Length: 153
Image 1 (cartoon, rainbow, N blue to C red):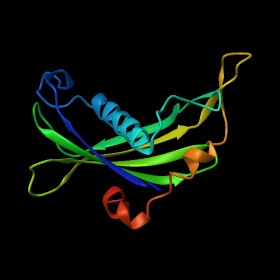
Image 2 (image 1 turned 90 degrees about the horizontal axis):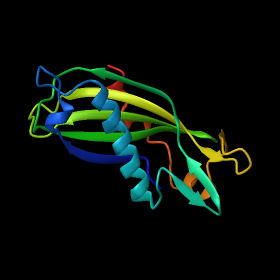
Image 3 (image 1 turned 120 degrees about the vertical axis):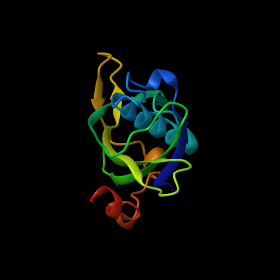
């Protein structure tokens, strides 16, 4: 059973803008990387085949609020929490902090909602389906006190 995951990410030069700070769009990439690592830790991939059915997790919502800059070669710690797991979707909360920052201040905070989708063999199209039980039993919502004071301020 998992409801949180932490990943560290060193900022690459290509992640920065002309001002030398992480370009805002990369925070969305970091959230997605963290979700993928979370699934691998559970023993699955974000794009899996289970019992002959091909599953994916398209995003239906993502947002990010930025508080402080991050620069080339600094390292971010991305802390992901499962806010809610519904029948067909999962809501995540992401908290970004800079490693080595003694204030432990939040650099950015984000959220993402993904929907479990299966590929229809006849049409090749993906459609929303219930999360496979093998995966659903591993993903549980985090206690709200884990993140509410951080993301709601």
